[in-house]
Amino acid sequence: MRVLIAPDCFGGTLTAPEAAEAIAAGWRAGAPADELTLCPLADGGPGFVDVLHNALGGRLHRLTVTGPLGTPVEALWLEHEGTAYLECAQACGLHLVPKGERDALAATTYGVGEMLVAALASGVRTVVVGLGGSATTDGGAGLFHALGAVPVGEDDEPLPPGGGALIDLVRLHGHPDLGDVTLVAASDVENPLLGRLGAARVFGPQKGADDLAVRRLERSLARWAEMLSEVAERDIREEKGAGAAGGLGAALIALGARVESGAGVVRRLTGLDAALDAAQLVVTGEGSFDFQSLRGKLVTRVAEAAAERGTPCVVLAGVVSVGRRRAAAAGVDRAYSVAEHVGSAEASMADPGGTLTSLAEHVSEQWHR
Ligand SMILES: O=C(O)[C@H](O)CO
Image 1 (cartoon, rainbow, N blue to C red):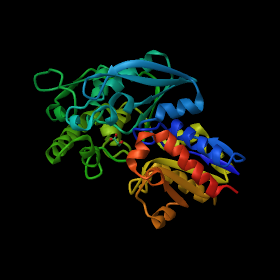
Image 2 (image 1 turned 60 degrees about the horizontal axis):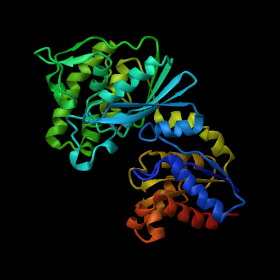
Image 3 (image 1 turned 90 degrees about the vertical axis):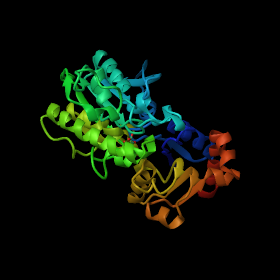
Image 4 (image 1 turned 45 degrees about the horizontal axis):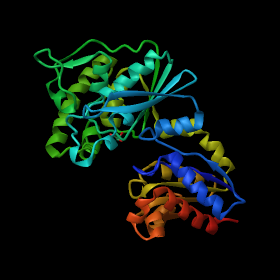
């Protein structure tokens, strides 16, 4: 049987390539005659560069940039055939900030701008920026600052980092100029910048913003949006993906970026469609298969694509909280939980790779034909 193994990352424990390897190891043990194709996936958020490097090869560049709350972090970007692939989460990801220290008002995308400056200096002609999984809600103001376009207040002094300070924005000093580089925003979501579905209201709370902070961020982003619309010479507020990565999408759009689905970019560059066409069984997975998964996350996109081809699809996840009927409606024939397989979530967390391998071996024995 030809089996396609196409997981997302297992949030915080396994990267997508590690998860694919762990599943493959178990599958080989349980069904050695099966032919396996590994296609780890990402959606623009954490893992974007890792997955593309795994699929394309190319050269990884390492640099130290400003992290979301100012502490320097190490970031990697990928250069492949004249294109730079950047992942905003490497510089401003939520995973870089311990839970108790999240600060949605102060978190900055300055480090993403530093990565962009480094990529441009290398002479690439196209830059693709993966968006998602950020700790920030600064509308990309930090990125603008790093590119030499500094948001200033009434006193003409640079505003402090973070979306909260943009409420005092008066003007920009300098104009960001990327030359004739083609810019692509590879976004994990289609949310607009402002309003009920905007960056502050939908994603602010998970970044540590309480109600008051969300309201402040919304007003700050509205002010910032006027500035971005001036730069873009059109209204960017309603553009799809403008609200991605705390509004970093809007800043990239103002700089001329075309917005694409991050999952779509990965799908194209990893050759997922051809792999799906050839598969007789699709195995996907993620850390938690829950109600959010059903709202268009990668795993359900893979399941839908499998269903369109009449190919069965199973999910292996750290924990599963989606019932069988709802999973089936999303194209998932069966969802298996690592925690259930090994007896507890603690046991699965103690050895995420080994326990996933053990579950995959068990599942392969059930599905092998
Ligand atoms: O980073 C974020 O704000 C979310 O992942 C949406 O892009």
